[in-house]
Length: 227
Image (cartoon, rainbow, N blue to C red; front, side, top):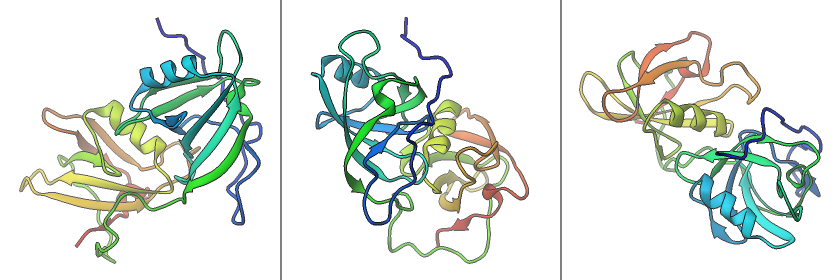
């Protein structure tokens, strides 16, 4: 049975990124992704739980901020028993541990920032890709098979990938008419919005998820397409 932290998300010490240097402390939050612990890559939920359990008093880790994609290197002092860190996690698409809950008052809410590992970017797209000025959107029946370079296997993968994306998202899509792949990118709504992307989808018989609807006035309806 999973040791769950139910729907308790801390907002204390949740600071915006600083242009001239990192904040001294930062709380983790739902949607962040833990990438490594004690300089060992984290591939899934179980590796994260094992790494926390096996850590000494102090734990160093890297995390991708859900707000803008910045990767921070941090350290914190763990509790000696029980919930040592105070996060609930699940597997993240493409690797890492996706944070689904943070318990107030636990070490996860008071981490010392060591440095910024990676600036907020625009997703793992080719820097030399030319993007259309014209706006596009996926067609009903198209399949979304990748988000920000991460493979999408089902709806759960898709939902997590959208939630954990930075300010911009890149979608790899299979055209339902031709079977050809294409790339779209768009700026997302804020993390706390009711819908960040505005694309309704469902599990597909094949790879990825199948587009059911694209809502007007949402980011999914105003994408740029790779040329």
